[in-house]
Amino acid sequence: MDLKEIQNLIKFVAKSGASEVKLEMDDVKITIRTGNEGDKQQVQQLTVPVQMPSAPVVQAPSAAGPVAPATPKAEAPSEDSKYITVKSPIIGTFYRRPSPDKPIFAEVGQSIAEGDVLCIIEAMKLFNEIESEVSGKIVKILVDDASPVEFDQPLFLVDPS
Image 1 (cartoon, rainbow, N blue to C red):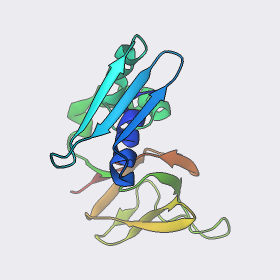
Image 2 (spheres, rainbow, N blue to C red):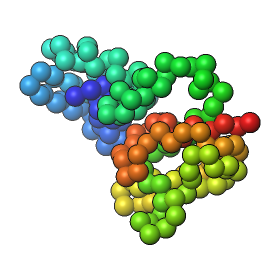
Image 3 (cartoon, helix red, strand yellow):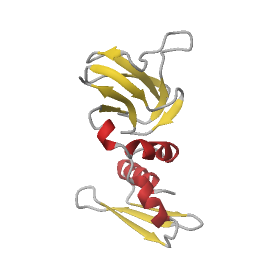
Image 4 (cartoon, rainbow, N blue to C red):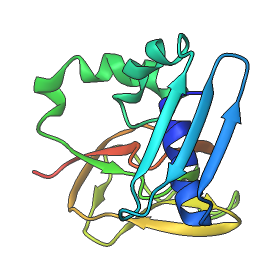
C-alpha cells in the first residue's frame, strides 16, 4: 500500500463519518481516527518497512506506472519550462476521441484555443470533457489513449507562444 492509497483511504473515512478504522495487512497496520477538532485525522503506521521506500514515488502526483517515464522528461527542465502543462482534474480513464469512430480531439502540433475540448476522462461511467484553459500549440501528449489517469497527472504540454 503506497502513500497515495493511504491518503485516499483517509479521505474516504473522513467522508463516511466513521470515528475509527483499523486496517491490517501483511506488513502494514493502519489506524485512522477522526477527531472532534475539525476533520483532522491521525494516522499511525506500525511496522512500516515497506512504506519508507514508497515515499519518493509519491513526490510525483501521477500513478505508479507513469512515474518511470515521467522522470526522464523532468530531467530537462530548461526545455519543458516554457510549456504549460494541462493536468487531469479527476481520476478516470483518458480518451483522445469521443467514440472509436470519431476523430481525435487534439493532435501534436495542433493549435488550440481556450475552451477547446482536448480529451475525455471517464469516471464512474460519466464522460467528462476536458477543456483547454490556455491557447497555444500542443507540443506533447503525455498519456496513451484508454489509459487510467490520476488526479493532477500531466496530460498535455502546450506552447503558449
